[in-house]
Image (cartoon, rainbow, N blue to C red):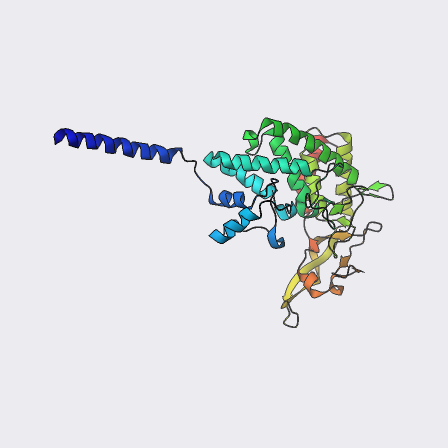
Length: 347
C-alpha cells in the first residue's frame, strides 16, 4: 500500500508539473489585439465597417466572430481615421508586452499591406485596392498618410517598439519613407509661383488638390498641413528643399490666421440636431479655417450640395455642426515647435 501510494503521488506530481508547463508555454493574450486579429483582412489591412473606427474594447459574439472570418477576403481595407496604422501600432506594443508572436506577425502583414498600397507618386490612397470614387487620391485628410509614414519610419529605424520587425520589411519601409517625403514636397501647392500648403487630398496623377466628399472641395488646409509640417520637421539634418518647404508652409499658416473670432456651440431646439454652431467676436481668440481658396486664401465652407459659401452660417445645420470647420491646429507648432526647429537647423 505504501509503495502504491508513493507511486500515485509521483504520477500526480509529474502530472501537475506537466499541466503547469503546458500553461506556462501558452503565449499571453491581449484582448484588444485578439479582436484586431479577427478584423484583419487577408491582404493585411483593416477595414472601417460603417465608416466609423472599430470599437475593439467591445466583446464579440460567436456570430460576429464567424462573420469576420467569412469577411476576411474583402478588399475594403483603408487608412481612414487611423485604420490599419492604429492596429499595427497596438499589435507591436502588444507583442512587446506579451511576446506573443501572433501579434508581431499580424503587424508585419499590416506593414506589408501598406508597402503594397503606396502608389507610383509615393503617396498613400485612402483605400486600397478599392479605387472607386475619391478613394485612390493621395490622402492627407485627418492625418492618414502622415500616420502611415510614422509607421514606416518606426519600422525602418526600429524605434517606438518596432525593433522586432522583420529586417527585410524594415529596409523596404525605409525606401517608402524616402518616396513619401518626395511626394509631400511635390504636392505642396504653388500659388502664383509661391509655395504654400497642402490640400486634404491630391490627385495621384496630376498631384494637384482634389475633391473628396461632396463638402470637401479642392483647397488649402489649415488642419492637415500641420501634421505634414511636423513630419518634415522630424527629418534629421534636413535638406535645403525640406527647409524651404517647412518655412514656406509655416509662413502660409501665419498669413491665413483669423484673429478676433471664436466658434461657439449653442442649444437650438428648432434644429433637427438640437444644437447649432455660430461664429462670435472674441478679441483674444485666433483660429484657422479648415479650407482656404487655392487662389485667394479666403476661407470657404460647403454643404452636401458642393456649393461654396463665404460663411459658416450659410451651409446646412447638419454639416455646420458635424464637421470641424475652424480650429487651433497650428497654434502649438507656430508658438513652440517651429521656433525650436529653426534654432536647431537654422533658416
